[in-house]
Image 1 (cartoon, one colour):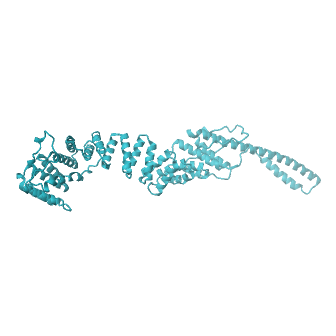
Image 2: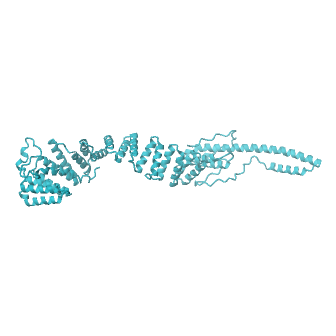
Image 3: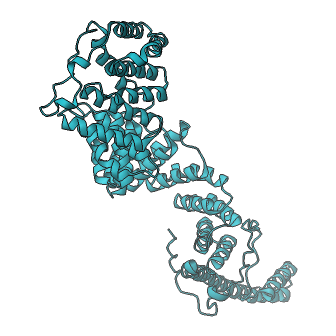
Length: 554
């Protein structure tokens, strides 16, 4: 919208009045001044006669002196004003209408240049009321008066005056000043309430009549189109504006936003990218919008590079939100190793567990299982996630633990199973968690069976060894051998071992203590069986071969 003070210092429009007065003040004193343009037939009696359009030598002398003062460098406006004030005071009643009209017109111009807007307005109106000036000059005064009303923020009065002036100029065959259309359109946007529909035609005319592009006129029309929702027309206008004034960032961002509203995302992106490459985009919001477009149009790597560059330059803040976006871009570009340190930084700034959960995901994908376990435990400790993500975090934690287990690492497998038991309590992760639990239970069952078979084989071997040794000891005693006592001691030791052997007993607990769970939730202690949704049939025979592991969650 046009600012209310934009037109107050437009002296150029009124300065031309000096040239209308110059002829009177520069040698035509005492003679009839030819009207500025010939009147059409039939209008003669409405116009002042040539004889009436003269000034006396005294008045001409004063006007000339005032004119000379106004032409000094710098202009002596106060001196010129004093001369005309004295003229009107001393000779006002004796001055002919034409002399008064010229004097008031000249003094109005001087007052305008002294920022006495109301005084200038009063003098121009006084000159117009004499009806002594040629119609061309009267119409010019109407234009000046309308402009002054605009400067005084009397916009409706300015609109009425501009309409009258445009009608008079059009009837006389004159070209209407583009500034008049501009002022009328602007005035319609500044009245209360604003009338943008009425502003549309003069705003369009103010642009159409230009021989060279003028920024203020284009700005007005752009504002009117915006308020009226004329998106197609506005887009066409802004396309011209970015070519006329390519360094105006606002035109680029407005055009991009407009394309986006119209569903032309590709064009919106292209405009914004050109503006960025030209060095026009400087705000964080503008950079973030551009980066999101890179992601949307499958160029996350470029988006991440731009965002990282602007973070390093201090344009974009390194806060939780922006770091999260950067990590997402690196992940989308499959640059997981670049995403990891960014996510680590972002997760430290967050009081909720979601970023630590995402960090655990990325670390797991990068096969950094110990670090993934740590991140996921931190995520569960912070909390603040919905059930789906909480369940998935337990599932991923179990996967990270399982992936660290080597042959016969039963303690690690038990800790993995505990996490899967937790995951089985959540709807979205329950099915996959049960598969993992069944898989680990199958491993335990297979290992148990293998241990029992090995135990029984060892017991059978000892039994045979005991029988052989007992026979040898008996023979030794009968023969009076020297080593009989040693044989009997060895035999007793083997018999003690055999008597204590129980192949159905569980294996001794591992000496490796599981670390305390920092998730804040008590993990179920494994006992070879689960409860609720995670229960399995441990009484069933173990499979002959180990079942393939369930697919890891993505």
